[in-house]
Length: 361
Ligand SMILES: C[S@@+](CC[C@H](N)C(=O)[O-])C[C@H]1O[C@@H](n2cnc3c(N)ncnc32)[C@H](O)[C@@H]1O
Image 1 (tube, rainbow, N blue to C red):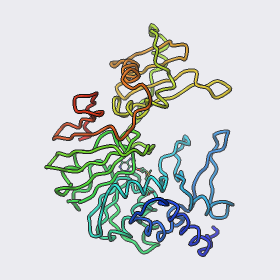
Image 2: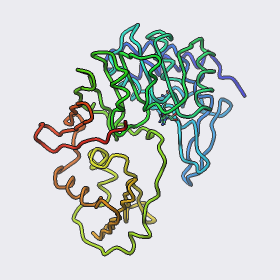
Image 3: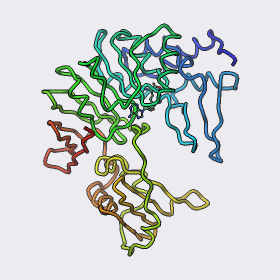
């Protein structure tokens, strides 16, 4: 493997770090300028127009420039070619770190070690002894711990489902997730110090919660869109064959809205759902599919024809959201109230449209 030229990397890294926060000051810029991202992303994958993945490493042209750019980089693929880990988009990482509002000496828990880069930024600024990071994939935690040690940082790296937190090192003053959750895990509240701040992607937004009392909190979504990989859970296939046999109904909701303007509220109304689309030769959407883990499945064609099967009528939920929101709703207009056993997201006012998020336990 060709090692990156350290002088070039240092120059690129400085420009990259200042470019991340040109219009505002952030206490994290110094960390981005100091921690070498290339040490955590020794290679990444890019997808060509034909969908094939290509590995890009230090010997390939453009490697260092890509590492020191504001790009999310896919770092792990499963056997089907589905990305399972990445180094997130640095500007989104910075937004989340700013929202975490952590100070030197705060104890921090991170769900989603991935490459170890975010854990390195946290350790650099807050002190390695204060950082606990966990990933579900032992290959990733092994590599991340090695890379962290390689740059002189030794936070506590654990392997397991981060939804359980890591009770052995609680309480935490700050908790951050870098995989998308359906709600804030109960364990986060059990392991949070009084007044703790939690920042986590929920659905396609970033939720910031302040813990008020044990098991309770209030929060809001940041304006920034976020498309993190979902926390890994067993996947359930759609029931398209069964849906084909269902009696069709008609809809006035545009099928492509579930991939666009309704994407964020839909993740709150149907947490953990999956979507897919069928397209014509020009790339235009001709139909969409949506399904959830309970076996409910719906398909909607641009002609307006809808087919639904399973215990829940998923397209009815889409229609109701299409009626509620004339355009794409602003994420920061969604707030959350948390009491033991209940997490409610509401839009604009507490008596406005609201959705209960599922409990992860
Ligand atoms: C976007 S990547 C994290 C990026 C990472 N923070 C970094 O700086 O490179 C999301 C990570 O979440 C991990 N993950 C998914 N489900 C998880 C779970 N249940 N518990 C802990 N980690 C999980 C994935 O293995 C993946 O590495």
